[in-house]
Image (cartoon, rainbow, N blue to C red; front, side):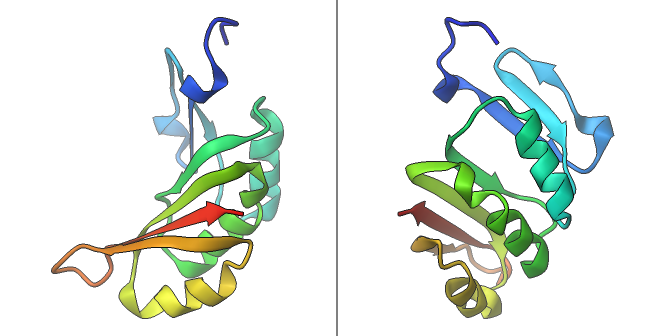
Length: 125
């Protein structure tokens, strides 16, 4: 990375599909299996930045995958940082609320008419 680029201007992505990985300008992507704590740990070891302003989970869209990635990634958020989980089914919101205790639920947005299209936004304490 160029020393004249602020780390807050950089975008890091990750996906299990190696075929979609790329590097372009201020964007770098990595491989990760969000269901594997070992893979997530390896991801964070390979990324040279200690903290992030925002983390967006738009991955597998299952509670277990979201929870695993959250538990092994929330420590990478700056104080006051935002963690977003997309496409959460309405019936699972109480489960997310009770299980994601390291952060406060900041916002829930429901997009009609789909009941699986909630956006959960957590704010790091």
